[in-house]
Length: 167
Length: 153
View (tube, rainbow over the protein chains, first blue to last red):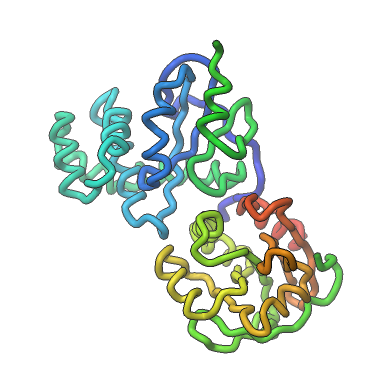
């Protein structure tokens, strides 16, 4: 049985997607979440070391799982594939169906047959699930949710993250 | 809020289809009652959407999670469809909030339930409760699994 009892948020590890430098922030985001999409352009410009984790609410947002799997599949072909697709999805939230993902993949120079196989693979699904379960155990109950120094931020995410950036 | 160790107050309430559902229908299994303020509110939507994603694991632990608010059955029906929810939603609509009051989860001045969780065991005894400090605070699903684990020991 999968253990979903309370646990501390997992520390940043080698399989995490991390970029930027500065104080560390771990973000649980849903690529299908409009609020995450609205805040992402501001959040990514903050002087923080950002670690993003998958938290797709699949029943509420039927495209979310496919979007998260696509980002992982892009990472398997290009070192910067994950972030390129991640940014692309949040930058244009109106085109999220499969043909739009193929077009995004084409623009990134991905080999599309492999991209399609990878994003439907069990390895990728397990990777997304692992993030989701870690979030559940750490008490994530909606997106966007951030952790700084292991503590979950309540309230205004952007304001809290901004306050972490050294002046 | 009702105290752990007490017998859970009996109820019969309509579900999202208007069918009567009684506490006794759940006897023999564990039941997690999730009192929430309002259908379609963003916070309640987040809460039930997160719980929806772990319904299989709740079932594996021998429990069923059921939502309760003072909204009517038609609203529950539409709310479930909007969020793709599969759990039963009970309507404490008439007399308004009577069952919620019996569990001590009603906020009189606001006219809706507080965000509260009640774990009832196979014998109908309340074993664990959680009341959010404010209706805006969502108890994570991890707390439900902690409680289910503690009760099964």
